Length: 164
Image (cartoon, rainbow, N blue to C red):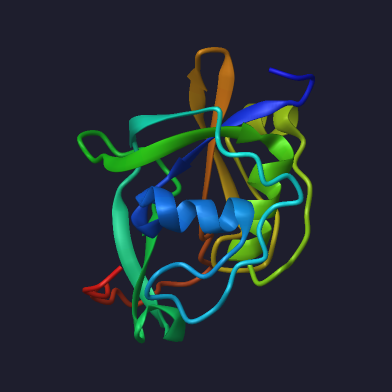
């Protein structure tokens, strides 16, 4: 590995599909998607990937034209005993993780302070659906991060799309 700072991105929902996720890394239009992703400034593939369980509950809420006007996958902000969300972890650079979050948030840029985020456990970094980054522990010496919503109000649940 080079001198870059690496993090695990624990994906859930559609980003568990490797080919779909790689469109966020290298750019391109995922199958079934309506838009083309710009990709990361560093298009290198993940160094490693593996299955993972996040200790947060999964739910589908809101609706999006990107997902056939169906519900969008989110996870809760607080671990819940007995509730797990299956995920796929990708070992990528911190900058790639920031680029992925940026693409998931309509191009809004931000930067994370890894030590601050580990201490806080979560932080709202953008005022958008996927604008809250969660720290989910460590594995092999690298922090595990994911992102979700920090709703300030109750949101209606919606069924997920069938073809994602």
